Image (cartoon, rainbow, N blue to C red; front, side, top):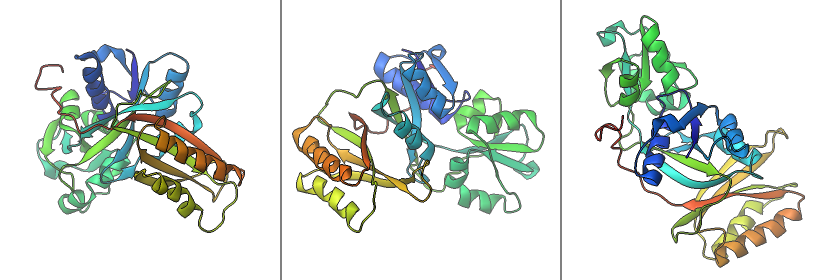
Length: 293
């Protein structure tokens, strides 16, 4: 199975891809994991260059990864979310330095910086952290540039030969990120599923959100997730995102989705089902302890 995920090598996305691979195959095959940006990951699946894309979706502290949802909406005709992986997130500050007092710059992904903002402010009040594309890119900078430290995972620090200067920098314990696994089809029903839905009203009027959520309520469907995203092609308009308990093929959810569709059509808007997938718990990360890495 060929998997593509957010690169470069050493990101939490790679860890999620390895955990998914281990779940599906019973082993890991790092050579079968390739790296790209989020849009190109979905393009690779659409063009049959990869079987699955593993993309960051939501952090329990920093919230949703908006670009992933935007890409899923754009690719919805071909790509569906068909599984999820929950990764335990731990952050360290690492570099080639031998003491934290020698740190002059701190680099990391914006989401990582947000998840550790309070601790970084306490430890390094004079340093303004610099956002980069990934925690792995930050580690590369820390490995190559004097005075630079990276906020990254312990595994990433080891990958790039960095010394750990501070451990456990996350502001909240038990931090985790949910990753979506994306393919050309949904997952078959398991009895413990979720369905992701995007909705855009063509014309706004008071009470529309109440009406839409009411369809789920009257059919006994719990909503575990409600978010809005700017609609990129129309300024000051928004797309609503819902995650519902159940598989889209289940009669009650099927009825609710049909009711939503009928209502949305009256406004010249649209409804897109972005996938149905099993609901997973956080997985034990044995990638290092088992000698897989």
